[in-house]
Image (cartoon, rainbow, N blue to C red; front, side, top):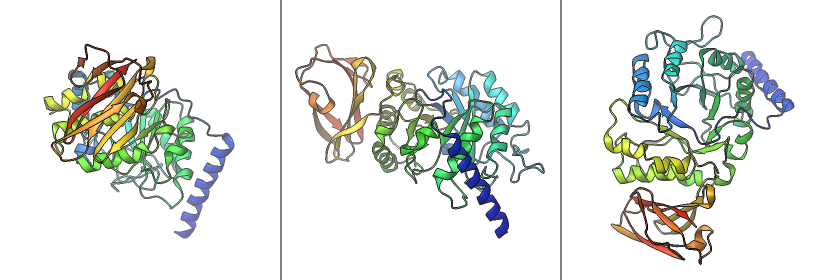
Length: 390
């Protein structure tokens, strides 16, 4: 057993050194020029997934109009595979839950005009411990994924050999580059080694945080951690504070509006994590707000930041293309209302500049141009989202 572990570590170290010689300067796969949008099975279904559910979800993405709103990736998370590799060392779909096989499922998803994503881990097992991870099998698995028509890989961080993330995750980068297919690489490293600082040479997005829960406090914790790495994100590589919880029922409508707004302005991946087959109208309306999505998908690709804080009252702001600015006013507290004032100088605009002000969620444009500052009452656990055009 000791010799096997030592041999595996030698293979991993050799692969990492080889990757360093090659020079992992950039994925250069042309993907992720704007943050990825789609759906993932984990937040709502966990391991309770099967072929029928995934096909129905693909149908729902199209029939509801979510796909036309930009949600193109359909990603199955953990628990899709057999407990062991086959006798040739290949991953196989679980025959009882995915009887047609993963390639056939990917073909179905593609037939709907969608892209297909899959999951693995940079360890010997995936996080559920129900199937093998890809550690030591990176090239074999990447080739397998490519042969199935996979478009997206979420790569987790469980059951490792103790080697650093900076060692293990770049090995899969090289494997994907050698697979013969352009595959979006979503690194689920949990922020352990601050992947924002080195991820642009390795993946298309990188988790900056631990897992999100469907709770107000969890959502805010993740976006606060993510905010610290704003300067490292941009086209081709995005900070990821984890998937969306909108529609799962653990937060109020206003809290979900805040959740979606913060993810949008932070240029975070918009990966839906609820049951699309039984999606309620309130969640649907949040997820399909075209103006909010446009902020997230803005071609400039600059993550907004927290620029002002007074207790539970905050101002977040960032630039958009065509000289516009996005501003989010947030009341994190439980007090009924909070009064927030922000000046143009807080967001990088000359105080003398008269701006056209658009309230995004209210879909209302102020009739008169506004100068110098704006003062707004914000309800508890709520926000207002504005786009300013000088």
